[in-house]
Length: 136
Image (cartoon, rainbow, N blue to C red; front, side, top):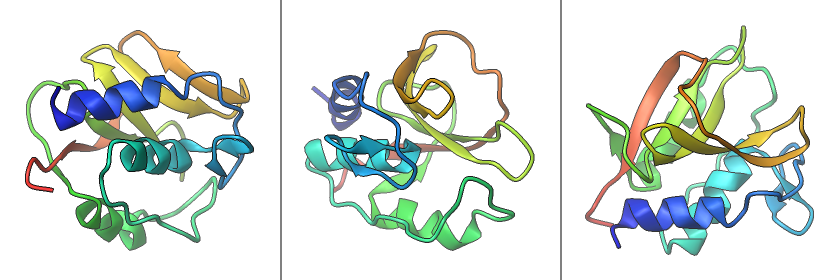
């Protein structure tokens, strides 16, 4: 199993977990960043956890170093299992999804109040596309 496949598996295992803004513990709830932090940790990847973000952010620049420090590199080409996408669902909003495959994603859905699987093409523009660095 590749590191990306393991990350996708760990993310999928969290489907159904309650949503909680800034949540980092599955028993209390997770947001999209919490989902990524917990799934990476369970996949045995060292994580740099961003702090100080809100539901709306004018800029993601302060948190981009966390991606690099968490063994994420910019990816090109088609989405594969374990890829991490930063999308823009609305003005001043950014959101993280973890790919299970090219058309299946795990993410924290605030409106539904839980971690869900989105099995379709993404309706949002992709701002960043990351992949685990195989060297971690």
